[in-house]
Length: 627
Image 1 (cartoon, rainbow, N blue to C red):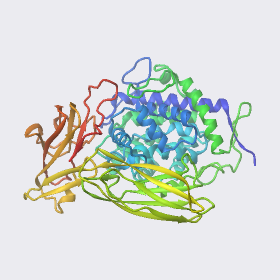
Image 2: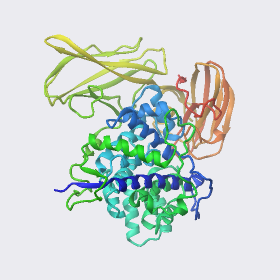
Image 3: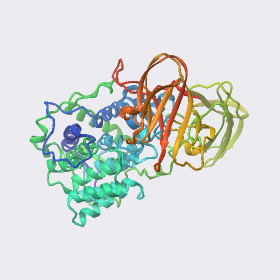
Image 4: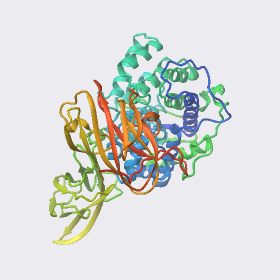
């Protein structure tokens, strides 16, 4: 069978067009981001001679750098390292994932544990780099998008959204029909996820002849959420612009005019249309006012970012050659042959025959750490280790019992044997060593129990030693480090004055764990806030409920009104936070909240203020504890 051919000039034009469309859509939607009403834009609301800086593109510049630094075998582990090195954003899921990563947690735990924003748009907006580096290979693009998304959205709709967009954008190098591309994208994500349901409903409403105003209202009615960054509703708005738009400009305007996370909807749709039509398809009306510059947000730093779209495109194409070679993508890049797709090249999922099948990724739990050994392995050819921390994740309280399960799978062709040894923190008690012998294709479980002491640290470093033996002698030892974080301790009281001690894995005060029946009334929670050094701190009581917070007996904030529930580091209601010059030492923190018929959600967040020495404000103080 003849090979699929992608002409290099055509490839360049599509990648350039995708990045240009990303800049245009982001600059259109950026100034109105977060507005939930129906908008009426007909052009850029704010215009300068360059595009707006936008995290939609910023983060993909970091991923380009990651591909250049680590190569095509990159996984979520390396992408997590890139976050810590180069991204100092506090925004929503970014802030929570960075907190976890800074403590030593890795993906997917970093994106799942203690993260109330896993269903949001932070990862669907950064799909293009994976599609552009694997053109026409949606399976490969889906694999990379998954590795990316689980760093800060594991277990949430953000993962499905990024995979969905990456698949569409990769397939768009050879396919242009909107409905065909949507069906291809949907085949790569679970049918029962909210993202899939929202897109399928929108396609149905469009086919039934509903107008775009009505379609927007139906999206909000059936799939809407209060948080303007919720992924399924915004993904549906993106597709709405595509289905109902009559031109490039009309399409991105309709997506943005739906409101909500407008920089994301406009930027992603602009990129999709730019890939489909190439650079030449984008009207000068939209491209000329912002030019070809690239602006990078100040909190994204420490690497050589492209200066313009030409450099970004050239570097994208360069890394794509390694990606395509590694995955044996069945496409020939040609400088003199025209783009050509022989009949029968694609399967029923819209993949070129021979493309990678990423469906196995959905079988993995988002709540476990997964490692392939030896370190650096990209495929299951050696030993696989899965660490399961239980339903409360990698947290442990003072003087608490913690159960952890290790599963070792032997994917090699020889039996492995030896001794498992667990290195634990001083003061902890743990298990005796465990002998193992695992035949090829078999696995074993080691369930252990740890008992912590009363001396608390913000986080604890542990190591699993896999001591391999040969001929009854030690052959080698592989040390697999992992981290436990300290739980928060509260004394809570319900409206009936019942008082209990509560241990919570993260920042949320889980009143429902302490009391079976959460009746309406006043709840009180007390803890000892431990601050290791004198500093200015912004203490947030993120809740929709009326709340009063006191520190060392003095009220620091009080708001008896219902507000939006927004447990973000940088955009919680100002009435439910206080900026304090906090001395080093222990401080009594008392929280009083009033429950009504709604859910009682309270997050306590000690973060930096907006005023920091270096770009990157409102970061979490990972060395504070609530005991």
